[in-house]
Image 1 (cartoon, one colour):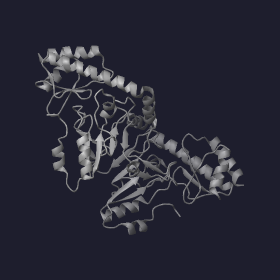
Image 2: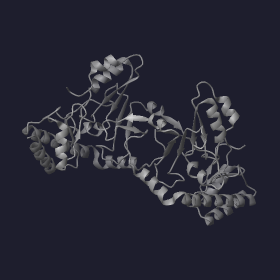
Image 3: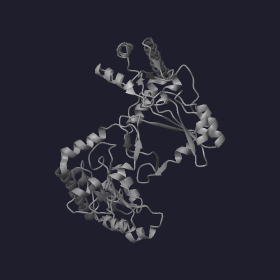
Length: 236
Length: 236
């Protein structure tokens, strides 16, 4: 399986109560990208909204060597979530919500005549602006070239770890699309336990159970190879 | 007028689509407390929810010398908002939402099987726990006696400013209930402008237009008297 949305299944589920579709660009568990182009075509043909959850992928996909259609270049995409605090390197809790048309943002308006602004578009109440400032600062500091450098290095390390895993007879569940690598090891839960005794705390996907690794920018090639050595030893 | 909810008006507005009432304990503009006891009786008789917005008052009212019924001691009160980041002295963005019955909290549950906890009860996504820690720390540090000391000093200063204003022929719109003081000056907007030229930036209530002062704990008696001197001079 590709671990992404099956368009015919999505189409079958649409009925007269359906107001929108959600596609994921960079899934939490597999780093996979749903077929957003096909979802966009479907949303247009049914005249419904399409939200793209690119919370993780929004700051990865635009900076990959390979290009994927997932944003407002597709006319059916009406909103996109992209979290600066994940691969965007801004601070928690900065989050991004983008709309194809600013009128959608105004639908969120709440009147606040008792404040210094008369209306707000947010689900949160009083909060610090620091994380918005941090997002702006890191965008200016890194720029597109900076994000490309970081993301492409993460992908190189991801591919290297795939190659090391294959030397040990371990296959990834899918060829990694983003810097999320899911390795298909027999009895993943016990492999995880043994790795933990060696100081490696990895996560597990729910279905199927497999080792899930997110190759973040702070990881060094040296640590990655030490992990690959231990993994080879554990599954031997 | 008392600038608080009129029970007979509230009762008239209830129809078969009404699921709940909201009362405010410590209004933003006037620091007034709605008749929560009467709202509680009404909610019980109509079998609907009663939410008490004590965002500001939740950390003031319990520590006043005078006692007001506004919390779960009233059986009709089903939920209360009380913000630790306002008069609770915790950091932004800590906010408090209390339920009479924990089952109401569970109604907010969102499944999060991809995280380390399987469900969450919140409207926010990824966020720092620092403000919750700050709230806990300040509760432990100040204790009930600490809050009483701070709130009662704020009230003393509020009453002193009322006395100084009256010496200048200015009356408060209501006898202050909490540490929010609204002064009925002629042509409040221009009084505000003149005060601003003297370095005092005060807010104005919407209806009627009047000077609104929140006597927060950092205010000194000396500054309060300097303000009263300037106010007397401006309205002279």
